[in-house]
Length: 112
Image (cartoon, rainbow, N blue to C red; front, side, top):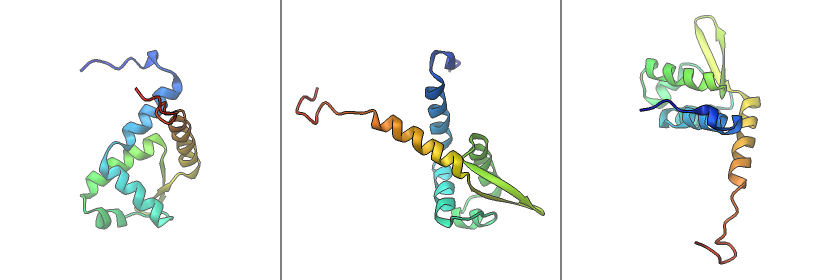
């Protein structure tokens, strides 16, 4: 597989692709859904809730934290994670703008 030529694309296109890549795993989606539903910081609950190994969850949390979707705070020997509200709003806005660019030519009966 070749190297992706990110220089050929806009910053917005590269950013959307990075976020989409971070979201492109069902375990990460499950983690995000759990954090959104909990509406609070959680730690060990994820292992019990998702049924995945701690190492697997830690790997997915790292990916989500790297992209900024979640944030963590250290309390003693545990780390509590929650949704990063600023980044969440930013991502929401980016994807809303992306999806809202579509105007169906089929709506007026002129579909290809």
